[in-house]
Image (cartoon, rainbow, N blue to C red):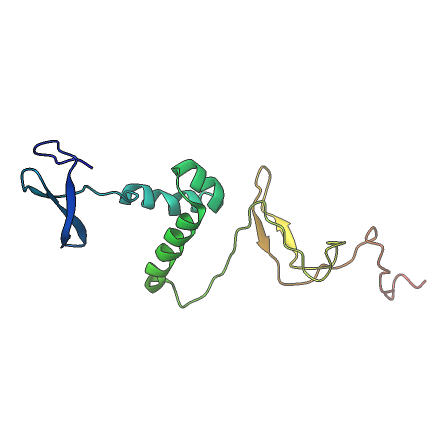
Length: 151
């Protein structure tokens, strides 16, 4: 590290001012601090945005040229900072996009987890349906006989 005034390489540590290391040049006696050496706040703001777009910690780290652990810490800190704006009313609808959860058995997905139905053509969104589906003729489940079917 060189002195910004005389260009000499002989600088020694000379305390900390406002959380930043201060140096003193041995040649001219000029005291100076080093510029910001960490990740800029604008880069740190991009991490939660990319995470909300669907990228994982490692791809975000590769894109921003930083550690995936740092990305995790930034996103975690951001999530904790917005904790006060959450609604106490609860969530009515949840959108799942390209996600799949196994519950019960990983060998088969039929009959486990939540029932999801499509929202429309060209949409990868789904909505939660709380009621169980009624079996039809093609479901493989026997239908209950009704009065008009017994004859």
